[in-house]
Amino acid sequence: MNSIFIAPRKYVQGRSALADAGKYFKILGNKPLILWDATVKSLVGTTLLESLASEGLEPVDVDFKGDCTRKEVDRVIGIIKDTGADIAVGVGGGKTLDTAKAAAIETGLRIVTCPTIASNDSPTSAASVWYDDDGNCTGFDCWPFNPDLVLVDSLVISQAPVKTLVAGMGDALATWVEAKVALATGAGNLAGGVSTMAAMAIAELGYKTLMEHGIEAKRAVEKGALTPSVEKIIEANILHSGLGFESGGLATAHMIANCLPSFPECHHLMHGEEVGFGVISQLCLDSAVPMDEVYEAVDFEVAIGLPVTFKDIGLEGVTRERLKSIGDVCAGEGSLCESHCFKVTSEAVVDAMIAADALGAERKKAAGLI
Image (cartoon, rainbow, N blue to C red; front, side):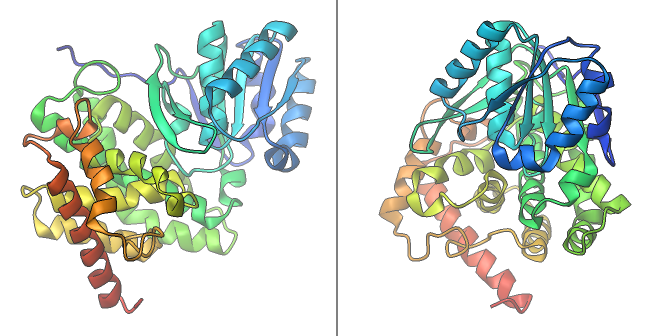
C-alpha cells in the first residue's frame, strides 16, 4: 500500500482574516455560493460580503438548513446549477462546511471553507459526515479533493462560545492517539494509503500543542482575549488535527463517537465532546498504552472541561445492554476499530466504556470537581 498525504491547497489563519476573503476568492472564481445560517451571517456577513464586493465578486447567498443530509446537498446542488455559481463556500460549523464540500465535489466547483468555530477538524478535510433527518450520524464519504482554501478568522473563533474551542480540543486530542494505532498496524488512512512521516509529525505536534497551550487558551477565551496560545490551539484543532486524522488514521475513539448520536440523551453533545469520551474509552481498551499516558490524557480533558463520565454525556445509569449496541457496531465488519493490532469485541468495547466512566469520575474527584 502506498504512503499518501493529502491537504488543502491553501490555509490562511489570522485576526480578521475574513476581511481579506475577496482577494483569495477571486483567484478561484467570480460567483461564490455562500452557504451559512442566519446566526453566522449576523456575525460575519457584513465583513465577508463587503470584502467580496470590493473585489467585484457576485455572491449567491444561501441559507443552510441545519444538517448535512442528502436532501440538503441536493438542494444546494440545484441552486448551484440554477445560478451558475463557480465556488462553493461553507461558512460556519462542520455540518455547513461538509455540505458545501459535498455539493462542490458533485458539481466540479472549487471549495472554500470558512470555519467560525474551532470545534472540529472538518475545515481542512476531503470528507463529509452524513446525518439523517433525525440528526443521527449515518456515515461519511471521503472525496477526491481537499478544499482549495481554508480561511480561518482567529478573532471570530476566539469570540465564539468557549465550549466550541474545548470540543475542538477533544477532537484534536484523538488525532495522535488514533494515528499511533494505525501506524503500528499499517491500517489505511482516509487518504487511501498508509501514513507518512509528515502526517505523524503533524499529529504529534498537535498533541503536544494541546498539552502546552490548551488550558491557557481556554482561560484567555473565557476572558475574551485572542492570545498566542489561542492562535496555537486554533491551528491545532483545525490544521494539525485535520491533516493528522485524514493522513494518519482513525480507530476506536472516533468509532464510539460516531455511535453516541444514536442515543437521544447525547444529541446535545458536540462531535469533539463525543470524541473526548471516545479517547478515554480507547485508552482503556488498549493494554499497550502506559497508564501515565492514560492519566495525562484524562487529566487534560478534566482540566479543560470535556465530558469524561456517563453522567457528563447524558448517559448516567446506562446499562450494559444499551451499551451493547455501540459495542456491536464497533466490533462489526468495516469498523474503524479494525485499526488495532488485536481483535476488538463488543464485550471489550462495553468494558472499556464502563472503565472510562469510572476512571473519569476518579480523576474528576482527584481534581476536586466531584
